[in-house]
Image (cartoon, helix red, strand yellow):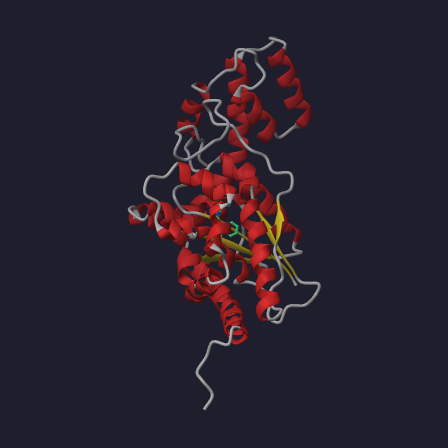
Amino acid sequence: MKRVLTGIRPTGSLHLGHYVGALKQWLEIQDSEEYECFFLIADIQALTTHSEKPDLLKKSVREVVLDWLSVGLDPTHSNVNFVLQSQVLERHALSNLFMMIAKYSEVMRNPTLKTELDMQENATMGFMAYPVDQIADVYMVNPVPAMKEDQILVPVGADQVPHLEYARDLAIRFNNKYGRMFIPCEPLVGDIGRLVGTDGQAKMGKSTNNAIFLNDSQSVIRKKVMSMYSDPNRQNSPALLYHQAFGSDKAKTDLLVKNYQEGVIGDKQLKEALLEELEKFLTPIRIRRAEYEEENLEVILERGTGYAQTECRKVVSLMMRHMKLGYPEL
Ligand code: TRP
């Protein structure tokens, strides 16, 4: 059994950076049909930083589902599941059990947690524990019984790799201490791109006001593109980099890049050409989105979530058996 599990926190709509850095790779995995895929909407994890914004999270769950469907993730395929984290109650039990074998000192050394902690004022316990909680996300789809050749792959960006290494460590620790049942997961970092923001800053982000969203209208995109930052050296202008990420014809893109860098064309022309490419890329996405907006998204989420529950229940019950948790035998 080859399974893929990955997730996103629903704290807003998704943008082109999410597409290049994650969704594009997820689509390839889905379409290869080699894996059973679990795409997780991590609404509990979103609470680790956004517990004061329940309305935003609720709205974002719908937005993320629509974003996923619109780019072509397709839960009508039998190998594709959309899972709403909070609704898999069994997963919370799994999380609690992993907490017991995760050491405080290890979690405090996690470099990703440390970096994120620096940007927080009053971190909650939930936040401090999220690297362990995330391990429960991964292993809720651990096959029961696990076979030698089974695999759990986790496609993520480089910042998530420490979390996955820790997920491997804890699986091995559990196996050694209580009995073999977990397949240590493997990160799948691959050749993932990172997209600069429209302001030329290193990363496109929802909170930094430098993103082009998958659901932005044509006129909004025109405004954003036309006011995009231009690199005076013509090397790192976002418009140039976006051509490279979204250009539909490599030869045409290469020529545009060359002409721009040699000063044959200016920013305005480069941006007009980019608008055309973005429209070409976004038109089918918009069409699919409009179709799905009429559909019952709850049913879609319930199917995948229900399947995850069934799988997770098996994991929890075996884990509890291994940990000798149960009524005393009389
Ligand atoms: N922490 C991930 C992120 O912020 C999201 C996530 C939640 C995740 N659960 C996961 C990723 C499980 C991989 C596996 O991007």
